[in-house]
Image 1 (cartoon, rainbow, N blue to C red):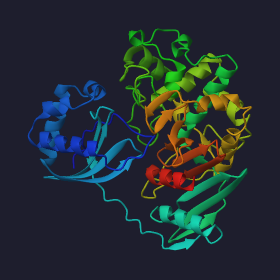
Image 2 (image 1 turned 90 degrees about the horizontal axis):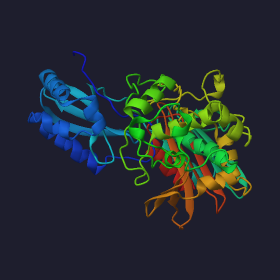
Image 3 (image 1 turned 180 degrees about the vertical axis):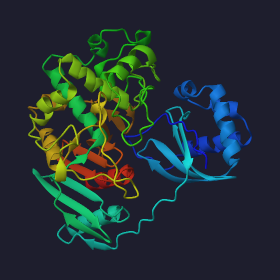
Image 4 (image 1 turned 180 degrees about the horizontal axis):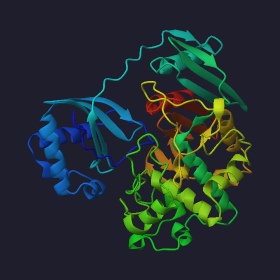
Length: 459
């Protein structure tokens, strides 16, 4: 088949579980009806502003006309999966071909991403049949097996459970048809968006010593005005209320294998000066933004006349004894657990430049346990500052600095974040009042729903 034109505006890293939400079904049903009826202008009108700018009306009509010539009308569709909570994948039967169609929606349920490519049937994964976790408590072994038996061969999970002043580690690996125990608390995984918690920890440490103000503006550290004189505070970046989109418009996502690698100083400066546009009025909506936290970390580095990675090393990793946490996957050798996609194929690790704070950290459950234990020490005032609510999302969830704060069944606050990259999924939660916590790192992408469910069940 002739290579298809595609548009992909949004991608990668999660902050919540997904499943097939009704709003995606409604949006895709309408897209199908308008596409088959040739109502391309109506499809354009269903685009978010970022999509309209990337694919103006004339280009939209040209693209959809060419698509229909190649593959015909859309006959049927089948929801396949979510992709790290960011977009939905459908197996879509057209008259002349079967395509994979990915669609993403913004907060207003407008389309801000479309991606078409020939559909490939996923590899069938036969569930594991042998639970060889005999060394673990029986109930715990049953819970872990139930959540991991459908994952690919070579899946690893590294689990830490903090309770009664102690940490218990439960590692597992799938070998052929067997889920068995593994000692992997010192093995290194990409932790994805859990990195955002550390970005806020760096911010809070600078606030506590009086170097930065939460209400201070990132604008002050750039030698040029931001587009339309938009002002952005550090606090709004830490709690996702800045109004910034999830990703910058000038991020080139054609490199799906390593999407953040080439986004550097030139690109972020260009974005702030020429492309900056808010999706929401600041401090009115908490809208998750990789761009926002990446910008925050990069600016913190500028503010201290260094780079963010060095700040992170000095203020967090060194302070809390996290000697097995890293800012790059290079030279890690056998320490690194190789990441896989949902079909069990090994994928490349991600590299970051200026957006590192959004998802670039690699760590182990042993190191992350040290960070959770530090939450219980009242002398760590910067960590207490992070845990304070700064914005109400709904009756069950508020935002701290970097943390999502959710209510447990007993009404207690649980501080939580998860993460996902091209080859890893993770979840971390802590109940400071009860001094309990759970950390789960995995080497499989796109399984955040299962990892989060396991995290909260264990907590």
